Structures are given as structure tokens and as C-alpha cells.
Length: 455
Image (tube, rainbow, N blue to C red; front, side, top):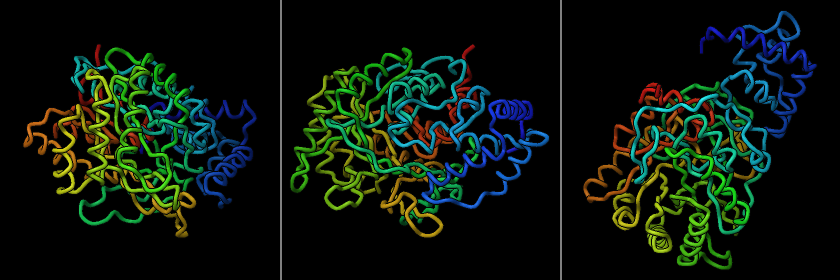
């Protein structure tokens, strides 16, 4: 990406702040080496961009062309406050944080004024601002994160999946960029093997961004998350909407039991409702849930139509009629979606899709990117065509069946054009995880280019 008019001044100011803080080239190189070792689990040779940047920091100082490398260095080493004060775009999630550290709060950046569009949109029976948001993901795990996203213009936010009892996250590392995948996967055949290191990087704001993650579905105890959901609801404006994603399970003794799982979904949904959630989303789509009995990765729930139907029907009966209900689906082929939708659509206010796509994800040496987990979810531009194709089918089936549910579409939304493409297919709202992670100011761009910012 070419340097902007203000990039030189920003780079110079960042260089001054680093020197004033005693963060010399050698110190920063050491911090970066430690961060890479933490991410990848082993030291790695220093890359030329870092050697060159460190020399300039201790010499004539950085210029406009150095700003991308400066952002990479400071974000990787955890010096987000410097970037946030400068108003620079950088990844919204600190990759060197484990899940517990990330819950403390977002590193930034935060726009000084929330981007707003003239007019309003109807989503799930509510009036909202421009219908761009963030699905259940690590960016939405606490009220502090929700408030950050809302301030940056994301109006449809799904609180990260919660459970009826505490559940640990998958081991660190959990999220990585995939710089080698810059085009969408083809719609036919199994997804390809993806290569990524946890320390890999993609320039913030690059629309050809792909990421991979393996968080599992961690959850605090309900005593913690119900209070936090209530706080998240309170921090939103009247034209913003919070959904709360829930996941159920059985007691873990013996083979999974259909109704026990459905009942736990309903129990957790009621907890979310009692905390003030206006809409509950059923997580039927996660590709990263570990099977505790054997350590393998479970397939998404929505691949099982009997279980999915029981969960949706049981939860709908358990909730007030005023509480919205959304089913989150992973990508399904034509026959699977056509067979499932008539069974669940009458109970739903919305269908959200798609989740990440499960792939084999490996480092260049062939070992799993996330140790012990050869499969992980892939999202971003890689899944764009799959999301477009799925949304098109979903809208067509809705029309053919005469159903009234809204579509919340996601997958490959990394710039205003990819957001517009899903809205044009008939989605009531669009959400993005990788896009919001890689470009915290994406909602502003969508508002400005697709709706026109309010005066």
C-alpha cells in the first residue's frame, strides 16, 4: 500500500516517542524476537524489514515508507498504546495475548466519533443504524469489547458464545494471519490445506486478508457473563443491536443425548434473555469444538438435522415471544440446507451464516499451526465466494418457502464492496470478524461509501 500524506509525520512522531521511552533499535529487536518465540514456540531468524527499521530508528529516524513496518513492530511487541494515540490502524486483537489476557479489554484503536449513517434499517424487527456488525468471536467477548466496536461504527454485534457452565479455551496460540491466501476458495471440492505461522502478518486494511483461528468455545461461569451481558446491552445506542450467542451440551457422561443438549441450549438462552439480551443466537456452526472423549474436533452441530431441529424448537418454546431467535449455520451443501431449513425456519427470526470453514492448517514444516489441533477455522477473503453462494441459496429458499426470517450474512467481508455484495443478495445485515480484526475502521468505510455519513 502506498504511503499517505500524513504517514511521514506519524512515523516521525512514533520514532520520537520510542526514543523518549528508551526503546532503541536493539531493545525493540529483542522484544520482537521474544514475541515471535512466544507465538511460534521457537526462535526465528530476524527478518530484513526489522533489521532495516531498527537501524533507521537509531539513525535518521523513520519516514512515511516505514509506517507499515512500524505498525507491525509495535503491534507484535504489544506497544498498542503508542499506535492508538497516533490514531493508526492496527489489528484489533493482540495476537500475543491468550484468551484470559484478551478479556481485560481491547488494545484499540478507537475512533473519536462513532460513524453514523443518515436513516435507519430494520433488522430482526428492530431499527438500527447501517447494518454492519461483528459476529460472535474473540472481539465480542466482554462489554468493553462491545463498547469499542460500537464506538467504531459496528451496529450489529453478537456477544461471544456463552455456556451454562465455565469452559476453558483451547491452548495458546489461537489466531493467526494467513498471508499466502489472497483469493477465495473455489466452491467445489474440499477446502485446501492452509499454511500459516502464528507470527505471520498482513498489513492492516488489506482487503485480501485471510485469518485462521482455534479458540474452541470458551465461556466464563454464568454468574460472570450474565452481569457482563447486561453491561454490554447498556453500552449500546438505541440504533445498535446486541445478539448473544449460546451453546449447549450434555453432561458429558456416555454418548451425547439429543434432548439433553437441546435443553442446555434452552437453559443458556434463558440466562441470556434474563440478562437483557434482545436476541439470542444459537451457535450451531462452530468448527473448533474439541471432543473431550478423544481430542478430535467435532463437526458443526448443524450437520445433524435431528439435533438442530430439537435445539431450535426447544429454545423457541423456552423464550419469550418478544426475544428474537437466530440460528447460526456453517456452510452446508444444497441438499443439506434445503432439507434443514423447512424444519427450523418456522421457529426463527433470523439465520446467520456462514461461520469459518474448517481446514487443515499447517506451518511451513508441516506441523499444525496450532499445536495438537490439525484442523482450524479459516475466514476472510478465503471464504468470500462460499458465503456469497450460501447467502444466495438461503435467500432463494426463504422466498420459495414463504418464510419471514432475516438473513445475517458473513464471510469474506473485508471492504465496502464485499459488504455491499451480501446486502444486494437480500441480507438484512452483514457481519465481519476477520475484517474487523484486520481493519478496526472498516465500519466507517462502509458507512461512508455505502450509506453516506450523517451530517
